Image (tube, one colour):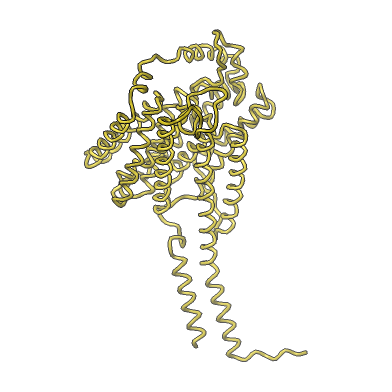
Length: 461
């Protein structure tokens, strides 16, 4: 049956409707891309906050959850990239040595390692941190998002530190009051080792503290972050971690030197910093300082110096490519020259263990990665006291420095949750901040309003 021809008003209406849909498509695409990017951020933040609560993700089940969560995060980020009008990959100089290090570990996992199975496990544990670094270096946060990230980690750090102090003062020797320690340890918070808890706080503390010094933040926001900073600093003191306390002091010193070097005067930063330190010290004294003071009076463990001497002979056997990532607990007993009833599972020095596991080549790539990250991290900080993007980068830089100092006395980077948090800070430092995001910061609403107005005019005519 022959269809009747369209009248001129119907034809005009159809053309106007098609034009309105065509104008509306870019705005809808931007809105969908923003929603996917928000989902990506939420997934990444959930992973970062889950790890420390799961005992540092050192058990098999928590490692599996992190790995599967990282895989889901990668898929979500890929879907978000597909919705972007122009799919782009941002490349930073830090990616070159990082990719080289991953390729070296992959070669070890394929047969160059002294224990291929253990190296493969370590490579799997490394993947979540690598995905976090990739995603955060591509999904750059703007100023509003950086402020939300700072608030989120300040609240998270406050709750974690509050729980840790309550459990320390009213605990029964079990994690969460229900999980026993079958293999011993020095628990604090949700960690089996107090030094690893201190390592987490060293990374979270500067993220909250730099918000306190930001002049473009509301008084309520600054007050909440100040309360979080005090709680985190006091919890590190209460944890009795000597490396954690030393690293926290170095972080404060570096921050004050940075502020004075940029401003050429202390302004209001020094009084605020001193006030927060006094509040943290007062809280620590009120909770009970005697165990921590006794901890500092005891000499350092002499086993660590003996491990250092034995490691020299261990290094000379495989100096260039190392023994294989994660093989230190299995290979070190061949070179051990002292007796102890405890298993030496780590060198208690991340730099030394990296050198032994991956050789000169791997250690050089790791140092090149850190150099690139730190070099780029101190850029774009001119407006740190006004812009949240810059203050968050400053907090990330201070947090990285603190953990790197602590890594000379412990193995925080071998704890999956702490390593993932460290890669997150590195991503913030290695990637320049994004001040604008095209239509994402409200322009899509303007485009939709314009489209609706045009459609109404067409219908009216």
